[in-house]
Amino acid sequence: MRLTLIVSLVTCLCAAWSAVGSDKPLVVEIWPGTAPDENGNIGEEKFRMSPKLDRKQVEVTESTKLVTNVTKPTLTIYRPAKDKDTGTAVLICPGGGYWDLYWQLEGEEVAAWLNSIGATGIILKYRVPRRPDEPKGEPARRPLQDAQRAVSLVRSRASQWGIQPQQIGMVGFSAGGHLAIATATSFDRRTYEPIDDVDKISCRPDFAIGVYSGYLKAKDKDEIAPGLRIPPRTPPIFLAHGGDDIISPPDHSVLMYLALKKANIPAELHIYATAAHDFGVRTSDQPCSTWTQACATWLRHQGFLKPPKQMH
Image (cartoon, rainbow, N blue to C red; front, side):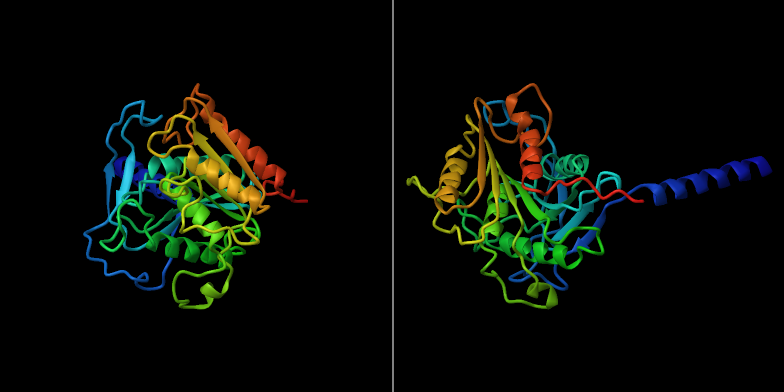
């Protein structure tokens, strides 16, 4: 009896210790109350699995985890190992056409990659699906409110979270690529009425990374979409795209690159022949899976992945 009690006590202590010792990511709500323009009557937030697609459409064909019905945007913060931490943080915008968020492929897996190169990965759970006043085929407007607020919030908590306030960037995939680039190019125009001191802090990301981005090209014109502009002080932008992407053709990234160059904004573009959509950060035998290495090299060259200062 006593032995059983001791064993169960040890088991409980071990379970409690592993729960405390496991680095669960911090989750923070973006807005102090209800988000702007939010009536919240779209049903309960839920996870589901994505549909299986064929290789012509996407690189990763199996089902992965999606989240939808988001009315309370959050940040989920994954910190790198202390001996790798460069002080850089990257807000992650999963794609999903502004209908869902590809949480696993373009969120959790991206945070793990960022941690591996010494950056804090912060998944932005922005509002989806589109609300009735956000027409299909155009970018939804509420996610940009969430993204601008998110950049200001991360900067406001930088010292608390061990982040350098001038080393906060964004990475986005598909519709999330549009969101990252829209945030990087609209920092001088807040898209909601400021509500507190957080909104007095700059919402300009220090760099942006768009991967197989959509919504960047105007319809039937070889120019960037009318909702986008490139003001002075737009931060450096890295673009990666599949040459055979039929969901979001490479023209989106090509035209954005040309517009950035014309505006004298530092930009780098990688187009991977034969690659389709949705390759995320997964390693494979396809050339498109090397974009993460090219991006890490670019970040180092830009000064965002300096080795951590050694403790003496």
